[in-house]
Amino acid sequence: MFSKDVVSEITEAAKALDLEPASLLAVAEVESGGKAFALVAGRREPLIRFEGHYFDRRLDEDRRALAREKGLASPVAGAIANPATQEARWRMLKEAAAIDAKAAYESVSWGLGQVMGAHWNWLGFASVDALVTEARSGIAGQIRLMALYIEKAGLAGALRDGDWNAFARGYNGPAYKQYGYDTKIAAAYARYGGKNVGKDSVATDGGMGSGPVLLGRGAKGEAVTELQRDLLALGYALDADGAFGPATAAAVMRFQEDNGLMADGIAGPATQAALRAALSRNGPLVRLWSWLRQRLSGLFGGA
Image 1 (tube, rainbow, N blue to C red):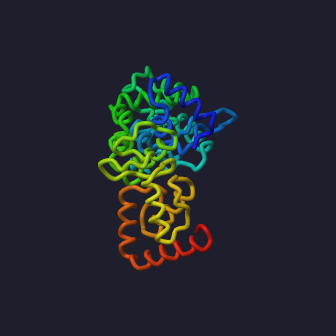
Image 2 (cartoon, rainbow, N blue to C red):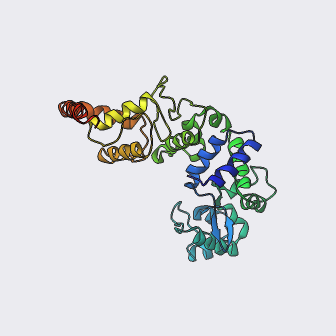
Image 3 (tube, one colour):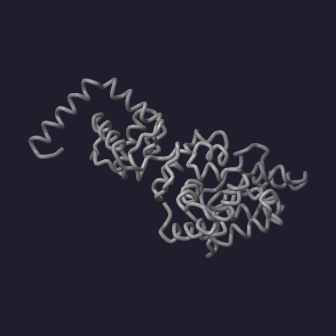
């Protein structure tokens, strides 16, 4: 999660744009991994990711040959690996910019929203340099850039409605489910106190609504208590207190790992179905465990 100072800056920027802070905080956290900037040569810089296949197709023949020789360009998406550190990524960008600055800046995703520089004209900037200046101006600039992309891409309605499936599909592409973008955004939205529990949102009041509810950190209520009791019945140690905190997330992740699911600590439809199946398979053991817990509770005043 972001630091308090960063949360405050993003919140103020969201209010200035008349958007719910929890929504932008959630998207920004998932896109950036909860890190708002990197220190590069003593300056706070936005997080970047260099896309070598973008760079490749923006170069003329001679520059393309040079970029490929230096390991900066490839016609194949993902073939040019990004360094692990932001400092090294900025060095890579500097090297690419020495070949063709405009093409290099267009080939980078910028800031909290990871908006591609190639979108500068579509987003209404006078040049790619203007987009980069906005991204480098600070957290507020990064949020303005992200919000501009969301509005231009027609995703503001999905964001306001809490339709995380529609939002993630539009923002992250058709493979969003593979990486759990929708459930991650829903859980982050709940953690930041989002008020709009849409059809894809993480439950915060225990209401089950008309379909499966995603349960993640910050959720509270009977649905969480039921989840905790199911995990307890299957041997995962935690308190059934109705509050989805770190212990519940850890128990969910252990269950997911044990059952070949994506271990994201969020109890979505697939995890809940697997829980029901596990409870059904282990019926006698579950009943024995419940009986033992009741006996221990009676003997020691709690278990």
